[in-house]
Image (cartoon, rainbow, N blue to C red):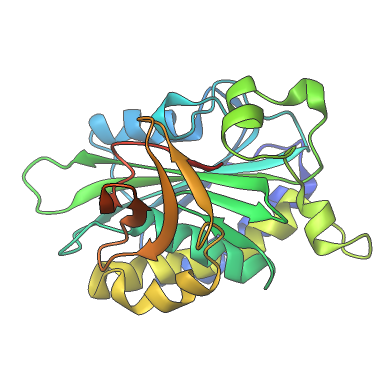
Length: 271
């Protein structure tokens, strides 16, 4: 476990998390870096070099963070929690993993957080966090190495800090911060938030490996931010979001009929 000396909150909580999760994830490493280009990029590079043990990488500052479809996710010190969880997995069906991650985070943080398919956390129709899931082959092993990247705004980002693609295409309003979600009486530090979300995330990802998306489907539906809304797809089509299919695909009722949308093909935003 490597810890940066400049963040006492992360130091304390990372140590406690390592103790709590090591039995569940033998060989676990927790690393906190002052600055990194992208926590996902770093873990994917390590996986390609053969380092595929369970790892949590936390960045105080992330200079080249990425969202889905190459969108930027920039962070500055103390304004956001950015971390990636990497571990070998071999589920029978990978469909719905990003949905399970979002659901896990939302359940750990607040009962009124909603989920915008496929990878955003919303607070009152404003984006408060995002997820990026990537995988890599592991030589001569049946598992794949999955890297789950999480970015959560702690403070409400200023307008100048929004990447254009995040502010204009991912949500109809300005991004939100967990300080708004949890309220002024709750101290929102990165260490506190990491401790809130990481144990549940590990448990839910391991359950997903064994049972797939099915056990999580109803809970996701109860937090589905798009259900019943008119939506616009990045390929130009429009329709009404009608929940998810059995594999976690978004069902959209269009003029041509019901279509199933996968996260690898298009992005979706409310009209």
